[in-house]
Amino acid sequence: MIIPVILAGGSGSRLWPLSRAQHPKQFHALVSGEPLLADTARRLPSTPPYTPPFVIANEQNRFGVAAAFKKAGLPLEGIVLEPKGRSTAPAAAVAAHLAIDRYGPDAIVLLMPSDHHIGDPRSFLDAVEAGALAAKDGALVIFGVKPAAPETGYGYVKTHGKPGQGGVFKVERFVEKPDKETAASFCAEPGYFWNAGIFLYGAKCFLEELGRSEPDMVRLTHDAVKNATYDLNFIRLAPCFKECRSDSIDYAVMEKTEKAVLVPLDAGWSDVGTWDALFEAGKKDEAGNVARGDILLQNTRGCYVRAESGMVAVAGLDDIIVISTKDATLVARRGESGSVKEVVQQLTAAGRAEAEQHLTVHRPWGSYETLHLSERYQVKQIVVEPGGSLSLQKHHHRAEHWIVVKGTARVTIGEEVKLLSENQSIYVPLGAVHRLENPGLIPLTLIEVQSGPYLGEDDIVRLEDVYSRV
Image 1 (cartoon, one colour):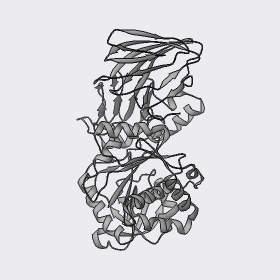
Image 2: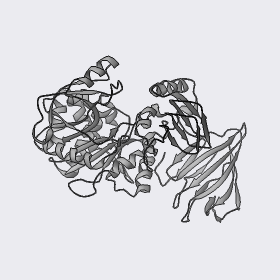
Image 3: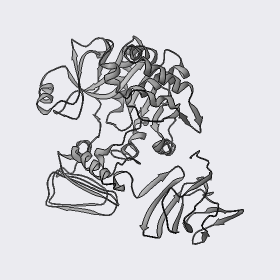
Image 4: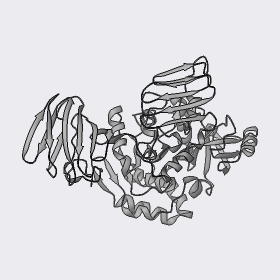
């Protein structure tokens, strides 16, 4: 069996202001009409030898993963929650332990990032099938892409000799993110590939190879899986996982093993890690522009323009990137969007909320958006999905007034339960135990007006929660 495992813990800071730590790029529809995470899962067959995928994520994004799969109607084996991010090697070991526990020692793991784009899924599966034959013979497979340009943000893999059965190459060495001159020489020399960050390996074989150099990592990840706790569809790794040394699968295993092989991947791959990469992957108009959203372009060429909120007009500019969201706008010269990560670092150092979260904040029951924030009052729009329920809670510092503008609300205040329809409202006094639910078949939308001396999200005392939040 081939057990797909999708890594969904990244923050995608180079795609700010769209991608932010609390709602990173894998949850955004950047290329197709679905989030990258759903794109990744959808390219996998739902029939043997493939199983439904595991997703490895963190506590912060766990409900985003669950919502993406539910909305897309995709099967899911489970969502594995790391108590602390420790890079890809411990995650790969966890994937191997889970695969053996569920499917036996002959299980093969397909480890993939959640936020890459593959334009030709059929060719991708052909490459996986070629790699699976090698993995069954004991090889640890990495997928490589022929370099199209001297990229300095990618790792490179040097192969040697002629390809063997199935077009599989022996790996000679790895080179991590070379400078421009070195990358150009790699592009000119045969045998070099971009490291696509996708791996295929027999679970038992991988743990044996990892154990040669990192026996503690094998032991700790085994114990983390063995002592994991389960709630809903979440698999919470035991706290001992945090003791693992943080290391990548490349450094911990692939650069040290004699079993590394490369399968060429010619499937329209892109890591869509920067706005420049999205420009290259996007459909262009006659002037070479890529436009997403409500856009007006005048005498503009070679630009990537994206409007998440409102209309954006660009006139008389060439080779520019413009990204507009509700609370932040990025303007950059095309070819230099990789420096956006440094912008995020500056915002973080300054304590700016725009570095971490959007105005719209996603929750397991739906979302809320801050419409106005002042010294002693705040106005929000709250959307509760059908069947969604906020926790039974109370506040020490604020009262709330709810006005239903769409759908039906079931409101509990103390011992009293009321149903509210459109244009009806209710007052929640300070300190009152209350709950908001959507018993209807369409999303519930309401306006919330908070008032009080302190309006922070940490002024929530949860007494009962169907989503097991603390």
